[in-house]
Amino acid sequence: MNASVHLLRKVVPSTVHLRAEVAEDHPSAEILGTERVGTGTVVAPSGLIVTAHYLLIGSSTVDVTFEPGDTRSGEVLGIDYAAGLGVVKINDPTPTGVVIRSVDDVRPGEEAFVVASVDDGRRVDAGAVSSIDQFEAFWEYLLDRALTVTVQNPGLGGGPLLDALGRMIGVVALSLAEVGKLTLAVPASLAEPMLHEIGRTGRYDAPAPRAWIGITCYALREHVVLAGVLPGSPAAAAGLEAGDVVLAVDDEQVLDRRALYERVWRRQPGEPVRLRIFRTNGMREVAIVTGSIERYFR
Image (tube, rainbow, N blue to C red; front, side, top):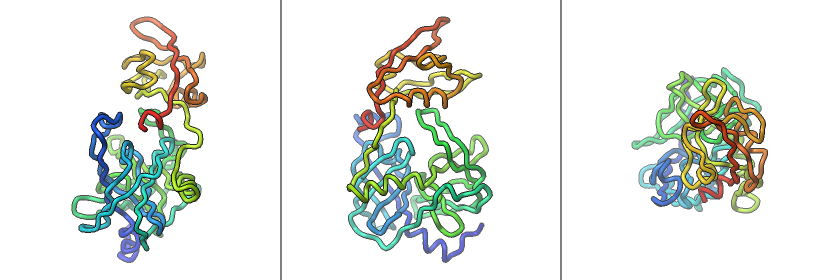
């Protein structure tokens, strides 16, 4: 698809360049750095901007640039760690804004294009939705429906994936070029609960944070192996280590990451969970008092 000049004139002004600074002692700094830059999308004339959550973790304010010479201060109003999205608000109203389209209506094969900020402005690339399927990450993150597209993100992450009418169907999250799928986007409609709550109360806080233990992991021959443990996390406090093989959670066998995540998520933050692990030629039980990622990155 070659996005028409009219369509680009409609949507490009609704994309912004975001820059956030995070204190060196914040728990996210070691993972994501102290300076984050990315793309956001204005979705309401009141100045609400949706982007990828990793740009905002650890920051309360963000520089929002519409075009060179027009940079405004934005306030982080909420992060949804389960969805992987965040919302920023600028105080100045704006006439721009794109419409969010529900992922329920999106079908593989649809034309789509990405707008992304770069140092010298905005860039656009076009392709099609290749799949709408489950996505699980090496951190404690899982989407039942994620969009993969045949579009190479032409700039910074966090920007909009748009359909042929300029409606936002996704928020660009990751490059999957190394596995031949090019780009992954979080369904934009997952931001709707955040936007509704912000419109009602002025902020968003997760209504029911789920249990979190603070690990990264990978699947290997029907086993889940820990790749790392976040410092100061519940997993670290319980003594888990990189290389541990998770065999079961609360006596239920674990064969893949989805099973591990979902069994931990049955608990509420603060409740204990038992992991059976294999380490150094022996099995052991490890009791973990779960926490929440919201509290960890507060």
